[in-house]
Length: 180
Ligand SMILES: CC(C)(COP(=O)(O)OP(=O)(O)OC[C@H]1O[C@@H](n2cnc3c(N)ncnc32)[C@H](O)[C@@H]1OP(=O)(O)O)[C@@H](O)C(=O)NCCC(=O)NCCS
Image 1 (cartoon, protein in one colour):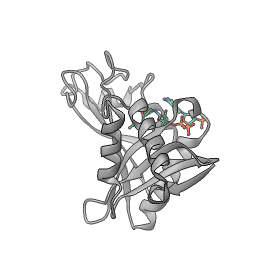
Image 2 (cartoon, helix red, strand yellow):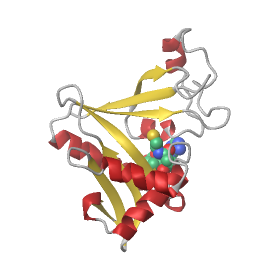
Image 3 (cartoon, protein in one colour):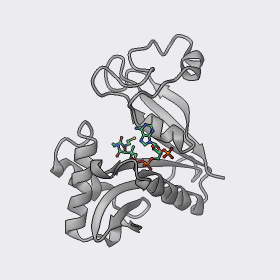
Image 4 (cartoon, protein in one colour):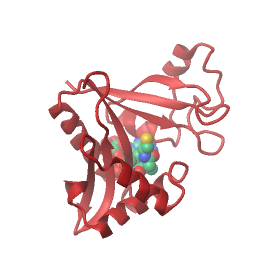
């Protein structure tokens, strides 16, 4: 498997990446066309989109967007690995390459927003009153089946929450990692 810049992908490979995006995150991109539009919108100079490719087939993709805060802070967006290829280190490899890129560009912090919006909520922050003892709730955080568990594994920490970002009791969870 190799990690390549998505600007080098063929049209067919871009479609494979878009298919992974809509399959993995249907709340964000309900259709293949939505995912293709998203890739077209963010695959522009300033952002870096990378894909994991094996035998010409796209297995996952990830991006860092143009930095904010005077170049100090990079947002990791999006990230998805084909469902039959998960838990094999591909997500970790894509994120490591994105962190390298953000570091190369002088970034100090990489962060992401991970919505807890599926079903009745997956993490211990879903359906909780985040205005009451948030530090205590963060200390006792349990990711459940949510992708926050993956980010915790690879060194990200919760640095904030946006209560009710996706409807009542469905927060966005901000996670970040120091780059240097
Ligand atoms: C999150 C995602 C990208 C992880 O990709 P992956 O290739 O399966 O991750 P890796 O195999 O590199 O996992 C790295 C470590 O995290 C662990 N891990 C992976 N997913 C996890 C999860 N949901 N919960 C807890 N731990 C997890 C792995 O077991 C591995 O641990 P190890 O080092 O002890 O073996 C993938 O599950 C995915 O595409 N999910 C759907 C889309 C999504 O949620 N994207 C993120 C939006 S913010």
